[in-house]
Length: 505
Image (cartoon, rainbow, N blue to C red; front, side, top):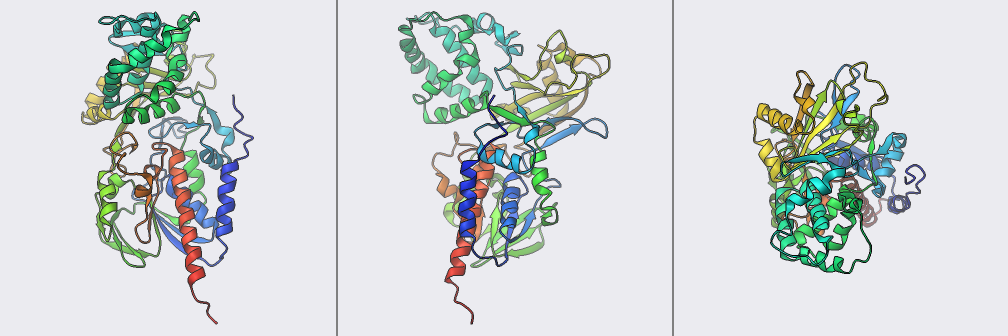
């Protein structure tokens, strides 16, 4: 296990050293920040330390944006699940810096992700089995050798593992791209590379977890869209993922504690007008505020629904056309953590289905899983789907959603359909959510014609940040680094402006 507590944060320290050297003027400055997600909060936190007067406008009644820990149960509300961000990689240095800065490093625990727990289940092509039995139970159903002859005896098993990985972790459009590439040329390339294999491989060598590194080698040979998405698969299936025990919301909450008097909730921005030396902001349809400098962290998918005046044609094109992917998460608050009992012995990890639920994640193991004499409630992330799969689920009624998900989960956990097992449910379809209209901006769909400079380019005194303004879409790291890059731009502009102003004698 890598050391997550004794990090030198070299890149972070270098960034702040540069910012402090730029911020030589101690005169108070002001800024308005639109959105109290992690990007807006980090920007406000750092600008306030640089002697800025900060005002944050948040449309909803909560802070955190797409970091949303939902809590169930009694007044202590210790049972929780993540409707939004739920994991962070070890190498996301800026995210770990703020966890350390907020005194939360002791809450970091490993996140056991997909394919990492062999006791979890696969429900693929009508067959249900444990992950450890996939090679015998699931792989033959792909029938890759039905209409072709391979030179290597290992090709079909490797291809089956790769297909399982991509199908489990990808939206429909990516699954279809991989299917096409696989049959057009990847199978032949894989067969050629394995033909001369002189090492005798064992069954465990073909588990999805062990085959994952092969994706890195194949990635460069795929279509651009698929290649970009495969990068996400490799990152999301990494062994070096972490979570905050007690809920991911602890991070934005801790930062917000430093900004309590600076955050205004229920302040929906409905219009932005760019004037020559200031920005006019319309709130809740009728209230108007003016600000010399504004940092907008609102997703473009929401921004495009507002009245926007004074924007360039180039920026409006990006705002109206940047693609966002949908995602739906469904939490089941269960009266009993049946998955930890002897029948299953599943303590964390994910089960996979090609049905409506796609991915099911188990929570951190209970503090005392040795005894189940009393009810021991827990929260299952019963379904996590993205893209077209999310769109389908999001269009169903609440009742149909729950029944379909229960039916799919029951294929490997029949207990889910027993009376009163599911005590409560929380569902979020981010593409339907008024304040996001999508889970994240995406690099693999509709983004290629917009380079990052075009997406982040300021409009007069209006700056842009958020995960959609970074190369790390859908990650907390992307939201944070985009905010910090704009903080640097703003400080540089303020410094240049002050240096150009004539001295007053």
